[in-house]
Image (cartoon, rainbow, N blue to C red; front, side, top):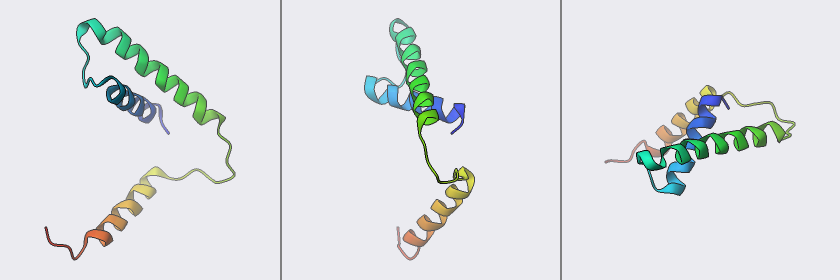
Length: 78
């Protein structure tokens, strides 16, 4: 996972937990600090995980997911 993906996930988490899509000026510092702390904790978690599987190619997995979705929804009328 890239730093950009980790930051995006942290931002999404803090938005969900706080209920704010964009905080007020009064809460902006706390919001930014929370995003940074969640991202840091996520990096620690990811670097600590152990697996014997090779890492997945995110682009390849996205293609597979689109193919599965196309198969699942083909033949359905909207």
